[in-house]
Amino acid sequence: MSGTGDELSHRARAMLRAVAQGRAVMSSSCEPDLFIDGVACCDQMTAHALAHGGYIRPASEDGERLVPAVLTDAGRAVLTPAVGHVA
Image 1 (spheres, rainbow, N blue to C red):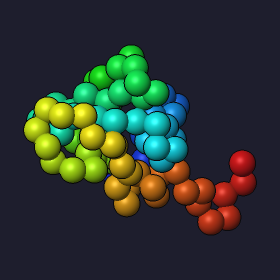
Image 2 (tube, rainbow, N blue to C red; image 1 turned 30 degrees about the vertical axis):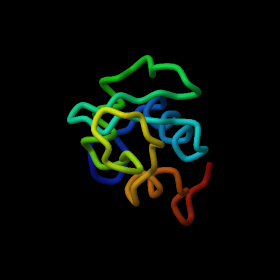
Image 3 (cartoon, rainbow, N blue to C red; image 1 turned 45 degrees about the vertical axis):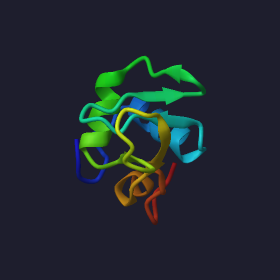
């Protein structure tokens, strides 16, 4: 899961929107767990894929402690409409 984001599911995009809205925290472990609105994300496989694909990252590297999740440049690009795109 990397590249233009065209391969991301609706669920993955919703998870990115939650991160963008500041509603998500995550662990900074090798398999980062994502929590949205204080609840463990129902699809940790997608959360791991978003992290490993370079779309999201922990705001700081603090081991297993939960820290805010932030979008990377790739994650922001997925949420930014393409120029000339007709919805």
